[in-house]
Image (cartoon, rainbow, N blue to C red):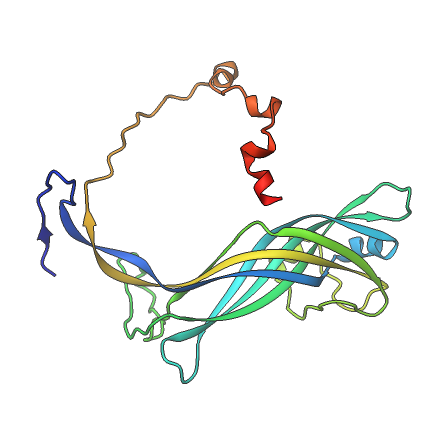
Length: 263
């Protein structure tokens, strides 16, 4: 490809057009899901605490990880199904009696979702200089695009306890060993005397990207304008550089933070 050169003018137009290797987004979608009554699983030690609880309160929810699987859609060239499995860390307070204090426990909830997006086609193999000379690349001839998912901080809406038979969404997904080891053992996935179900608000953006070469306008090199400051080991000197937290002592009014508009 011939290199294009453009001279800058008074209007501030770009200097030249350069070819870069980048990940181009071919298709994307956003979604807002209310995951109602999905089961919270616990290891054996914490499940015993759940069996003795009379009430539960949800505190927080965090996304541990998301497993993605990308497969071509049959008879629909260029389209791919993206299977996502979300693993949530659910923080709860258990109550054994109305006047007793809460017992903090952590469990996991699992949610699966599938979307279909366009990812175009490609019939090339990619090799790079950082590959090993003693290994043969077994990559398939048809290079698949890459699926990504962005997840906002989930919203912990509610939680409840059920006795005996299941009364919510049961998960049949295998829990990875790395998650089990984080919680100290295998999870109780079968029938239990008491089970906890949580309702979670979820916001996601799913994308399919491909590695392509694109011609883009270039304005100039990214030359840093700020000088590096030498760090100091004196804690008081570091403390003096921190601005006084005025907002912590004088919280904004409803009109200042836009709260009245949301209400």
